[in-house]
Length: 502
Image 1: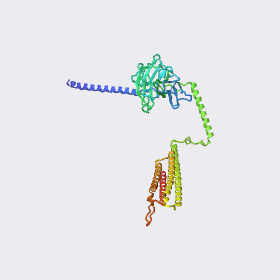
Image 2 (image 1 turned 135 degrees about the horizontal axis):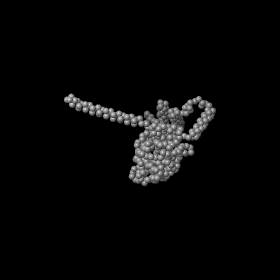
Image 3 (image 1 turned 45 degrees about the horizontal axis):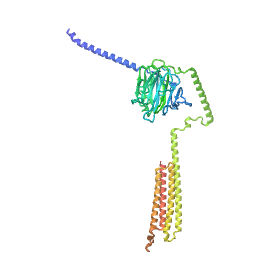
């Protein structure tokens, strides 16, 4: 008896521990079952519906129409987008599907831009799913009292509460009149504040209606990531018509924005476990035959054009198609070589002009030398007049040289080849010529202003030459010219060596 009393607490503790472990195991098993069930839950089947979608780059046809869609009002289709309304006052436009949508569950992706110069925009853009096409009306360019759902991107603050731009979900059974004065807040089933105007990237809206739940996701257009969506609003237990038309409309008022839709993509959703409809189930047999006949006609025309091209161009047969076109790298290399060739031609033209200048200067120097040799026997009293004559002749040479150098420099700049080294070279030549001209002018003025000093004769023994004789002047001019020509040739050789190096 004493033993049984002593073992009872131990047995009770063991039983309690076993009960706790069993409870923990059962709870863990239930949690794993729930997690496995949620993990194995299948997502709905998603199929792209091309007849209820549009996107670039070949959005519109040659006649301005959109395949499977109609546009009204001020809407302007183009190759890569549909401008629902331009940035003008009091504009309305819309696009609608031609055929009714009969999907029970669906997902729509809308890519658009709302841009304008003003700090505030108006009025906004709307995405519709209604039983009838609201081609024109007062609600963002579409008709009022619609039967269905509208997702409004309102950019103008009508009620003055500073709660715009905003995204508003409004449902209607065909009897309600939209409350413009309060921006539809009294009728909104869901809303969120998002600024969708003037974004660096297009704004994307994903609207999902699945199992009586409408979800709106927004990509604000701050990043190029297409899947960077964030939650906007959600409406549960929402019943909308099973058949209807999709549409996009926009309107402007006293203020105006460009409302551009880049794409509208529709996907049908099928619940897990249900058999998705076959791809050809919604295409009648007549349309299939028509499309097949058109495809065969296009194929025959393509074959005929290939044969005609081969007959007209027999030398091209057998050559790869890539060899007929220039690649991007080949084009860049060709442009580089053409640019270098033009630079080389311009440099050669500049060298020819400099050679002409040098030849002309040599001719002038020879003329001066002949004149000096003829007048070397003149009296000392005529030295000032001859100096003036030589000075005027030298000034003429310098002016002519500067004129030709300036014209050559302008031509080089106009041709786009006036590099820094060439411009500096011409400036150095000008400075040297101006220095020589200034030195000769000072010498002549000294001789003219001080004739008495020239009259002073040097001592008889040893005889000294005069201060500035004709021979000395000629020697000075010749030395200056030789140094000038040598400098030009030296600079030309340096530039040619540098060009060859590069």
